Length: 263
Image (cartoon, rainbow, N blue to C red):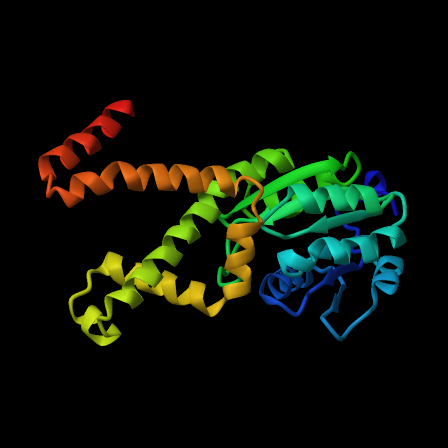
């Protein structure tokens, strides 16, 4: 089945490798609600890659970042011309390159910028990295766009560069906050007694990060642009630390005002 031959009423099978995980389950439910038969495989269950590719004109890889390219190399050779291979990982350059190299199918890198706790696509952002997608791209745009998602089309390289700030830097700061809180030696109960709403939200983010170490370690350390972000983070810290060490509130205030003036 070719993407160019699709009609709005076509309800072909969709395969999700890793469909037993959080985002895989979310997209499985999404497509089922839209009327598509969904085939799901997990780490040790469901159809094998060759079976999935034979049964489904669209196959989505939704596995941990560290094994994504290996899984792509398993399923890719079984994808026929005119089918579609996508992935849902938080990094795009490596997976998209692997899909292009391993398959004859069309290829779109997909990054849903939300977690499995959302109940609707309305107002949610999805990054699209079309790589070889002339036939299937209209279907992807329509499928997610008509449910209210905001679709951002970009290159895999630009996606990862921006994610170095949006995700890697963000989660790095959460990790450092968590490590610092633990080193401070103040009991969680006492912190909560003195907490503000913002701090409680930050504590929740810390707990979430420490509950999913593999996910966040791969997002932070796996981004090809993270070294530059680490350098910028270190530079910023080293800029303000002397001001704080000297109890220089006025100097620190002026430093903040300088940044405000930059816009």
